[in-house]
Image (tube, rainbow, N blue to C red):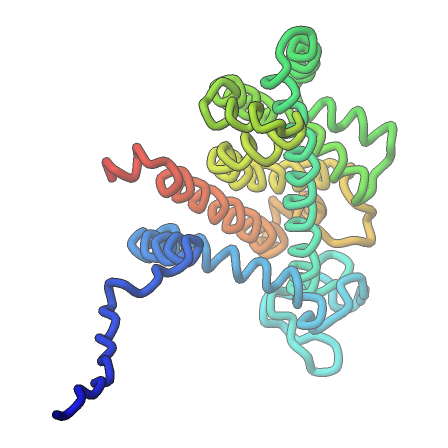
Length: 313
């Protein structure tokens, strides 16, 4: 009588449908990229923005001349004209013989730095103020909102001029002034969202589990309101860049030895009625393209992050 022998068990291959799904952030990134490629304007805005960031980072190393190097003998050379030592002024020279192209490359760093840093300052202050106002309400809400109303009662450009006259021009001062001028926008948005979220079930569950107030505000409520804040920030970067250009145009921006697009426009005022078109066209076009890129990306972010708009799109 033969004994039964054990037969080796065969393992069925795991179908593809049982493989673990890709991480959520990867799926979201692929969906965002597909949405941006489908929207050609958004892709164009991203390309312009990436070029501007590249220029801001590596522009000083790529600049053919010192942006503050003066050569009176080669002043107001037209674009493509001969520079010192057989070189070329690709965008011409200004009234002091400085290379416009080199100054444009150096100015990108200041303009983008002011834009992002001011939004970081204003966004941080506004988010904290909005969370406190919306979560606690009462007299805390009244004080914060009344301070915002007082600021909005004055034209921002006049407040910025007043503070910069007192503090003096400088990169840090202009970042602080422009950042403080943006906080109320974020505070009002965060306050409104916090008022609607603080009574939600998951917030009540966090309270029941013993989470601290700071944990509820910054780890439970804040992540759920980042979508509108991201959209507002993309638009505000453009407005801050324009404000910096306006203040530099008035001589209240960074010091004169630091080239910015706004100061280049200011220096071209004396030649607007002459045939020195390149002095205003090149920095003006740089401002227009970067601001347009941020506005286009802001429109795309609004459509992409809002599920209601995405469903009807």
